[in-house]
Length: 316
Image (cartoon, rainbow, N blue to C red):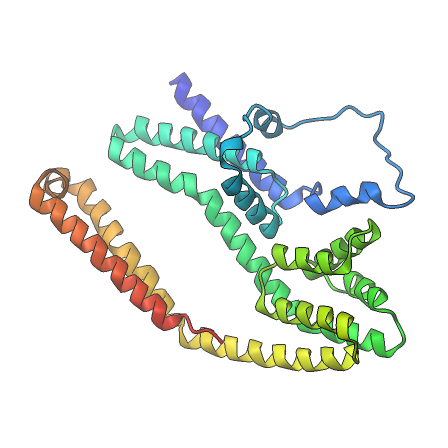
């Protein structure tokens, strides 16, 4: 009983702390660049560093030097999602919540299969949250890009330099675009070349419209030309592309919903049958014919999902 109470407490505390840090934390990666700004004075030199429980536990995780590529990829996804947590902190959250909730489900149900299923779901929930946050951030960035291009173009026509136009955008447009442009300005203030700063922006934000803008700016820097006129043409092109994307999204919404329903129906029905008649459905996992049926059904469902995705994913 004590172990159950401890597990419940750890799970609830970890989830609450994680959500609080995601929503209210101001210690985001981009803010670390402020220490290099001219005139910055730290007001907390004499204060003791206060580490949260998650931060303290994350320091105990060893450095995974054997798999640097996957670690860099995971850290890049965290940066793209703008999550104010490190990879080690997210790993601690996943371990604590997965262990606590799985142990609680096992104590209640005494069923290893259900506990394993819950463990897989809980372990992947943080990844799904990061993916959702990243996609929402990219969509918001794309929706702000046209306005940013118009501001840059108008600023250039008013006699501003290109970097002054970037500064105007960073001040007038909210996150995420404004924040990313502020990061560009800070990188340039540290001596980073313009091309490298914009290439870093393309790495942090995956957007075809942004690639079009950055490539046009870099080409203009090399060969010259009227940048404001180029930006006006790009703005019109991006605006038309976004209209087409919105129409395609409405037309393919039913197909995307079909993918979700088709993929979830077998799992849902299987769980219902397992809860009401465990011996009946276990024949699929304990007999040769049942295993063959499961393998064939999984292959067929995978092929069906691939075909639907091929139909509804239209590149423009």
